[in-house]
Image (cartoon, rainbow, N blue to C red; front, side, top):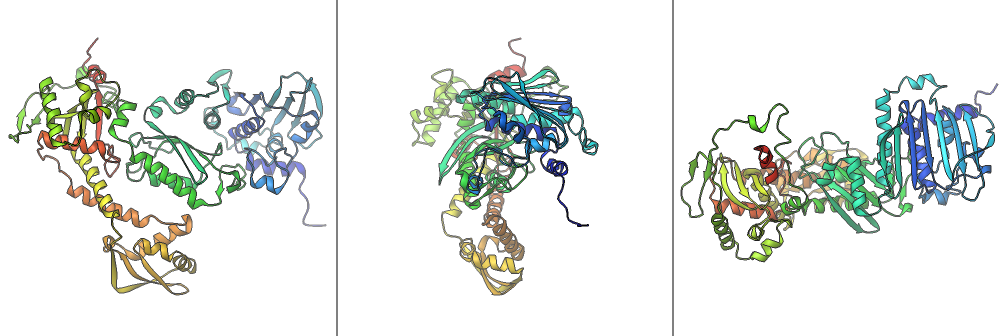
Length: 619
């Protein structure tokens, strides 16, 4: 008897189901993709028991012909590709032809559909076994409905791995959220146990799209997000990225779409992480909803059964494009942009739940106040409220300090909703009024009170200046008096030889003198005290994974950040009002000035409404 035999269709389908149908949300994903590929403009999804009892999806798409209904439940049967050429440039979400066959092998499935040209609808059913499906007439509008009941009823071992009903529905809701973010032109309705969870009408205009994102990702995300659009080299990136101050403890608000397909890709994740490297606090994760459009022929979506991963033909081009687009967008954010979008962080929100503004201690504030004339600092028991005359004096002092800035240019950089003509002359961060405990600068602008961490702000300003000065000139290198020999693998040695020119540009002179032996003759001068061997190995590892390396740039930036920290104003240093105002003006024109080199915020805004709320005014 032959030891090799052909698997039965039922067993083959259940093996495929193990790859495609991991949990109820996997079924929802496949059904949603089929509905969108069919041109649906409205999709309704009913869930019961977290998807184990019932998953019913109805759409108004093009429908399935009567003769095609039995084939739709067969393995490797699809209308989306016919040849290898179609596969290499596939533009649909689904194309394998395995989903319905796999789902029907582990559930009781009923598929009902009607084409637009048909007078009646037809349905076909399957119950977890290989059978010739019977087609029967049915009542149904134009479109398709798929009803999946008793998921994993014939594979009880699979049910043991499922979580609670609440958890399984949360996964389903996340799948629907991703598709709703991908296709703004489609309306979605999601119900769980007869209760409407999401009802999203089509979002055509930019305002409607932002409203949908706010519904799905939270209003705070939209209040702290910036819109980006960049196109180059056949690639187009657009979407919303959150400001660094709106970071997350988990990577739970990150959505990236390639040609409207949600993906998880290491190359993309690395590019985004690098773009946030200089502005994100350690251990925090950025939030974003981004869309990348490119020629389908240069991206391979057929690398994973669930189609969550893709492979780019030119990964390095895509990586650099994403990194540079986001890096520039984040660098161009200025305080005035943040103020025009929202009022910044609220101290009320950060107050402990058990405390109220009325219960806060009313101890006197020790404010150090100085004048522009260089008079000694005076410590007062009460804050100094600037009068209109003081504000006018500071505006005149600001003009004297910066004659290149006219009143018109200052007004053009201020927020658009100033309450009076006098306040419209204020810069975005306003003018300094005091210094608190030698650490914080207090300033008044048209919106209310601005608090600035003077060391963190000056650290960022100094850091950005050091970077510009460093990269404006050629890389300073240091030849090694005694070249360092380094034993590596044959693959690493080949990489060093292949990328010799790129390494030289980075300041590394590496020569291959044997199959597995390198000779390091030169390193960047700023890294003369670092572990050279480890540095070269890390650079070669990056070259293997990404085709390039930013290790040297990262090390250089770390050194510049250290220098900036030591060269910035320290706590308890008393500043004059002129020095404080100079700091505020520098912040307004410095890239990434909202965060220090370690990702901590440098300033925050308290609006008049928030101050009134703190003191229960108006009640």
